Length: 203
Ligand SMILES: Cc1cc2nc3c(=O)[nH]c(=O)nc-3n(C[C@H](O)[C@H](O)[C@H](O)COP(=O)(O)O)c2cc1C
Image (cartoon, rainbow, N blue to C red; front, side, top):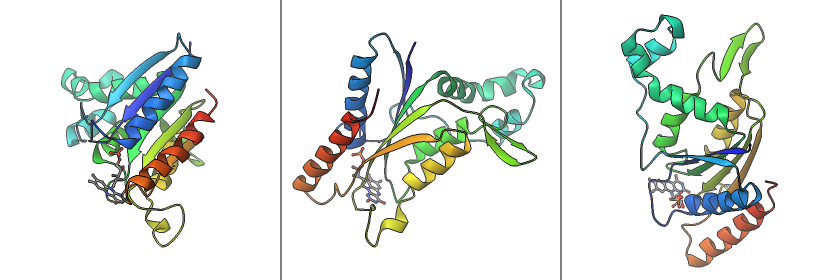
């Protein structure tokens, strides 16, 4: 059965463009996969904790050797990894905050990038362990980064492509609504372009 993990990270629970576009894609996916399962992770409404020293200690202790406190410490992290591994489609809403991803999304990444579960290091260097996923990322940015003087400051698409690829997720599509701080006409134009892109994504 088709399964989708839907992650949102805009702190705007109302009026968010990344949430709106991701939601429209989700409706399209559900229409095509009526019996598919959807797991929602709203990293703004229900933030996941930042990493702690205790969590790192538990990560690097083999599962069968973890004591009860260590197992409890990384329970959330384990659930997040399980959700990622169980999904075949992953939708991520990722607004640009200060040239990068919101800290809530970064915290999620810090939980799911787990040695031995989502990547490993071998003789040839790092190897991603998360295969067969289709990832669609809905990005919203106030400025324009697809070309022009600010292009080098896009640390959203470049970072997500790198870290998802590091874990083995190489089928990653970005739908970017950019220039949305430049007035209503710019928002309408960005939404129109993003909608035509998302509607063309095979589900
Ligand atoms: C805290 C914060 C930081 C932002 N930083 C940037 C930025 O560095 N560059 C940019 O182009 N837009 C920036 N913006 C504008 C957002 O990317 C834009 O409003 C986008 O639509 C937010 O996504 P959302 O509509 O899904 O909430 C920032 C917005 C907020 C709230």
